[in-house]
Image (cartoon, rainbow, N blue to C red; front, side, top):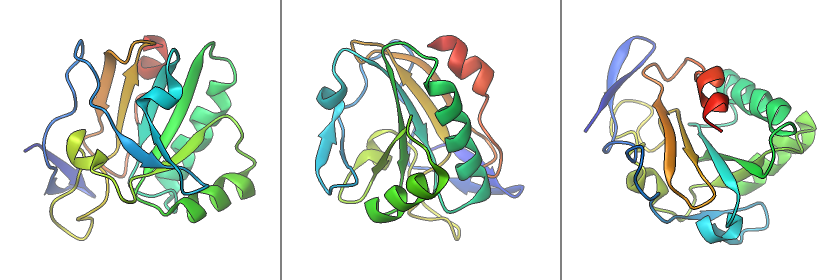
Length: 164
């Protein structure tokens, strides 16, 4: 169980991110049409998993906008924004923001947060995802990870995008 912070106060998450070099854990997430998607849905593409607590917060919104801006310049790559928000809220956020280069996916009905070691287990944020980046190659091998140690901080975009 890892410890990160929220506004300087410690909180705990369910485990560890998948290790670099390992095969990514399978997942089932829910898209805006309430359909389940899996790793196979994006077979043959590099995948940036931008894992956030909720799109309804300033930092999550900022990271989603940033990846949306950068994603259009990446070849054979999808950016999956994964949050605990309901699919309806995710779709509304992306529509209002005009975001077309990211794919919002919900952990609704999913064990994703536990499987990827990002489930927050305590404090007022219990049940949400920790902020993390996991990048997978075309064969679903983990090539980069970052668990952001302060939930209220943005990820390291430069290193994450350099890994793609």
